[in-house]
Amino acid sequence: TRPVVAIIGRPNVGKSTLVNRIIGRREAVVEDVPGVTRDRVAYDGEWSGRRFTLVDTGGWEIDAQGIHLRVAEQAEVAIDLADAVLFVVDATVGATDADEAVVKLLRKSGKPVILIANKVDDQRSEADAAMLWSLGLGQPWPVSALHGRGTGDALDALLDVL
Ligand code: GDP
Ligand code: MG
Image (tube, rainbow, N blue to C red; front, side, top):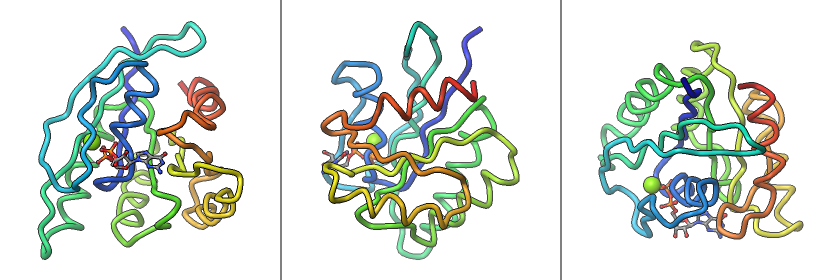
């Protein structure tokens, strides 16, 4: 059976845009407004002749009190079922407390993680991506899911850990 790759991250970081970029279709629901609750959705993905199942963890309800908890819960389920994780961070925002909470779960899981520094739309923004070395998850891969910049290198890195 195909390996399962979970895409996790805060709302609005570009998870669904990345899914669309990888599967080459406009299927994953892209939201301009964060906070719309979606179920996890699985797609067939392929890169360099390797096939895998991509799980878009969608969004989760934003709740001023419970946001960190909800982020962590959603991420934990996705991590459990995955063989590898694409952890998406918005490089233009940087790592938030919610991102740090997910990092703890990722470390605990021992699952391979590819850190996607998304919204790096041009070379000038690559310094934003480099800031994410601080998460301690290894190399941040600068990506623009919107324009396709850097996605090939990140997917090559994914295949290396699958
Ligand atoms: P999700 O909630 O993590 O699934 O995020 P979405 O994929 O729905 O994207 C949220 C918003 O970020 C949308 O307006 C996207 O067009 C935008 N977005 C996603 N990827 C990029 C990117 O690489 N660069 C820029 N500038 N915007 C992006
Ligand atoms: Mg989404």
